[in-house]
Image (cartoon, rainbow over all chains, first blue to last red; front, side):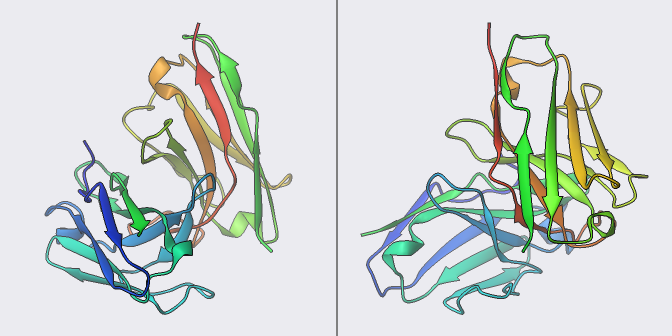
Length: 111
Length: 123
């Protein structure tokens, strides 16, 4: 059971917009700690996609965006492409655990 | 270009020990905190341990505290994870990840990852 809760799967057709939610608590996202998002393509290592809730590292397309509100964070992907099919993980810091935590992951399927 | 290359994984019996290494290049190693994150087969990511850039501060997940020891040799640009009293539930791919600053902080991100090394604990 992950401290941060994500839907197991989402799907969308090419060109569509999808969002992935990440629900935390008053010990992590709700406490003001930043949310990060990572993309893991099949058979590869995770890659940082969003940091500090809504910032993109250099090289990440602006089709990817992040937001945060209350105890939740969200990742939005617009103009969905086949290459976006991957697992996506949110991450934050948890004060009750005194450690860094990940969501359970969401598998994005491009129809 | 940042490169992180893990090694040392393999098959080990329950109760056994193993030491993982992560060779880093492409950045000033001692200027950045480093971490280990693992992923059990078919499962999600789990933070395991972190160490500050100078090695003076270490952090552990409750699941490994007292059994794993993180360390670094800044003269060799290498990160280590000494694992002992291994259990079946420690079976996972272990990733080395670079932090965004010298010290671990609540805002720390894992901005570069290695390709991982597989640890299998089984009799």
